[in-house]
Every structure is written in structure tokens, then in C-alpha cells.
Length: 623
Image 1: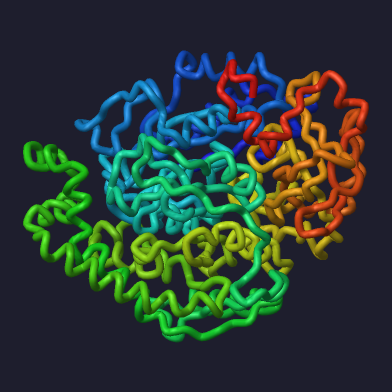
Image 2: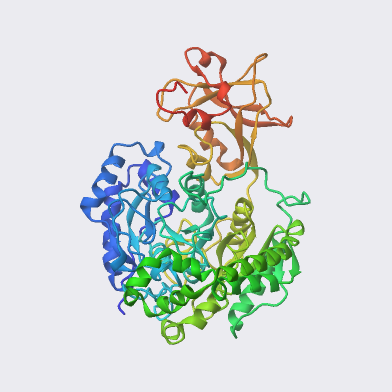
């Protein structure tokens, strides 16, 4: 298979945003370059549908009329796994006979596009999202970015490959049994599997509807940190959606600071004979310990037992339920392996489903005893990689091996982040997963980022001229080690924000691009008034301390590197400035304040309690 080098275009979100702001790039010219790259990878079976010029026209027209500062994802290209709806484009789930064209995009796609993201196309997958290999598709197997003889992993194979090859900045996948983490490990990417229900699955063709998650592939945790606040949001149209609990400062059950943490390591690990992966995992445990972690040996047996329930128990019947009419009338259209997995579920009994639920509840209770003493558990993402030919010769057993460390996650209601953790002697990447209980997403991301940016790490997140991940901010030739961009942790300054800089809002990128991290969501002391100031876009709030008649206002506290505060301060227009803000717990922190004269002629929105409530008011309501 011939492989042409990539154009030296950096598609990290921060890099593209800088290029747009400086006038060095437009979304239309970016699309032209991406199309060139896509043509170079036509043999890699990444795409099922690439948007035509006509299909992209409306998206580009909207961006041409927008200010890059008002859209946090302005012109950021992304790929969509082809079991997730994009309006006007067929959804096939790699079963073309089943294709239908939705009039409306999936909720998560709508949210990303509203923030300025630019859809490039729909990606290949294991048919009906059934598989962890990326070979069960009538559109062809997707090869690994590092060695085309090896699998890219599935079922979200095309989405991972699109990011790894530098065709998009990020991609949506789905993750029921590991499909958002296995391809991340095999392609040296970050894979986010959020808590079930945090990201809406409306507009996603179900695999196992009670377990499905929309997942995210990114180059690094900083990009993921910009995307997740936009992707997350309670969707009343999704019956399996769950509202996120209020954000609080990251801490473990016994109050340990995040600088020191405890992570579980399975007592008995299964490597399927792969000593290279075992060695890299041991090194990762040492690195995480050096970063302040305390490794705690745990019994992994309950997790293995839960994993077996997914395919050996009645949950396969959920896959049957998703396509019941189709598989009854047209089973011959399915991929042979997909059919062999799903079709026997027609004989599943309701009594078996209840028994399996009882068994799962017992297992889950055993795992819950671990969490009061742990901040996360660390495992390999996969034990060993496989060649495409090996998977085609032994599809069921090797797929099961790939899911050994992933299949239990959604059954046990866990959140997970997969990150690169080194390179194997054979030139393939190795990855690990940090996981924790439901709604531990934020602390997992922060711990994973520390591991990913560790100076001894041998794999880095940003694409270079080859498409393989290299050091952030650099373009390098393959085989040359990257210098660590973060040899020492900068001094951080707590910063209180109350308006457009809040998570997921128009100016939040100004914090993230400077390396800021969210500490907590809280309220001010009850001695402030909040005003919607005149001018914009974007609209800006004014937080003014008053001697009487004040209320508590919802705010977020971020930690921003002190070295970047100057550039941040330079961009704050009058009448706003940085001063001291009193929080509900009595602390005083630096934050956005407003000169008192600005209240004259501004709308007092204090009664709403915060900026998000003001923005969410219905048109014409006066809110």
C-alpha cells in the first residue's frame, strides 16, 4: 500500500484558532488543504461519506459572516462516526442497505456546529458498531496509522484514523464496549469515554441503547477540555440522558489534594503473551507514582466478571433489539461476523436478562467498595495489538482479547480517559486508561493530562509532517524524539470568571489556550449585583460589589499560569478589570470585576443568579 506524507499543517484546536485570529487562514482554505490530505489517504478506507462543496457551503457561509472570537470552535474541522446523524447526509452504520438520511443532526453534532465546528464527513466503522477491530465493514478494513499491517481498532476506526492522519482536529465516535478507547490506544490518541448520559445519544443509531456513549478522539487533553463543555449538556429528548452534578473542586473521598492521589493497579494483569506492553505498563505505573500518585494493588476479578457479561450474557439481545425487523427480514446483508454475534440473541429469554442484572448488581457492589480509597484505577487500554490478517483469521477470540480492559466500563457505570503511554519496540503505540466512578470525568482528565505531559513520556499529541503525534507546537520528521514542552509546572493563579469565559461559552478558549484549568464552580458572597453590559458581541457581564441589596452570583474559579496573566489582562476592555472577588466560603480570589458607573443603562440580571441563566432565557422574555 503506497502512503504519501502529509502536508505540514497543524490541526490542533489552539493552532487553528491562532491562525484564524491572525488572518493567516480561513475555513475555506483549510477545507482545500484537508481535501488534498483526504485524497492521499483514499486507500485507507477512513471515510464513508466526505461532504461535497455543495454540502459544506452553508457551514462555510455561516463562518464567513462570523467573528472567530464569538465561536469557541470557529472553523475547527471534525469527523463524525457514521452511526451518528448529520442532517442531509445518509447514516449507514456501515450497513449501506439500512441507510437513511436524517433531517436533523444528532444533539451532540448540533451543539458542536453551533459553536463553530466544521463537519468534514462521516467515517467508517465496524458494522453496527459491533466490534473492536475496524475490519468488519463493507467499506474495507481501516489500517493502523503506524503500520498498515495492523488494525486501527474499532468500532470507531475511521474516526480515530481521521485524527491520527491529520485530516481533522477531532472526531466523534461511540463507545459501548471500548470503541472510543481501543482505537485511541492503537493510534496514539486521547480517547474520552464520558459518564453515560452526559453527552446526548439522541440521533445515534443504537448498539446497546442502555450502555451507549458518544466518545471523543483528540490530539491531547487540552483540546478535549475545550470540546467537552460544549458536547456535554442534559438533553430532555434523550430518555437516557443524565444531568451533570454541580461542578466542585477536584478532591478524593478523604480530602486528599489532587497533587497527591491514589490509583489502583490490578494484582493480576492479562497480557496474552505480550511482554513489550507489560514492560511499558510497569514504566507508566512508575511515572504516575513519580507525579504524586500512590499505587494500590486491587483485585481485578469483579471487573473481568462484568466484562464477560457483555457478550456472554443477554446484553447482546440489546443489539438484536436495535435492528430486530431488519435482521429478521434481511440477515444476508450483514457482515458475516456481525451476523454471527447478533443473530443468536433472538433466542434470549427475559428470565436470563433479569438473572444477569442481578449478577451485575452483585459485581458492581463489590467494585464500589474500592472507590472511597482511590481516585482512579489504571489499566492498559489493550494488552496487545493485532495484525489485520490475524483478526480476519480469528475474529471473535481476538476481539474479545481487545475488550479485556474495556468491556466492563459502561455496565459498571464508569467514566474513562485513554491516553498514550509510550512506544513499543515494534514502532506501535501503547496506551493506558484511567477510570473512575460515574461523574469523575473532570478529575480523570486532569490526572490523565499530567501523565500525558510527563517529561519521561515518549509519545506526544500534536501531528507533525508525518501525521504521527509529536511534541506540541513543533513539526518534526519521524523518528526524532520531541523535547518536553512543559519541563516544570508553572505557578498558577486562581481566577474568578462570571460571564463569557465560563466553560463552553464564547471566550472560554482564551483561558484554555493559556493553559488554564477549571478548579470549581461556586458562587460569590451575597454582596454583588450582575449586569448585562451594553455593547458586544459577545455580550459581557458586569459584576459589581454593592453595600446593600447584593445577591450570590454563580461563578467559576480557574487556575491560570501566572506567565500568561499579562496577555490575558491586556485583552480585557473597560469597564471591566481584574480585582478581588469574595466567594461564598469567605475566600477572596482575583477575578473579573466591573466599575460601578457601568451599571447606569445596563440591565440588572442579578435575580437570575448568573450569566448562564441570562443566556438561556427565551427570546422576547426580557431575560
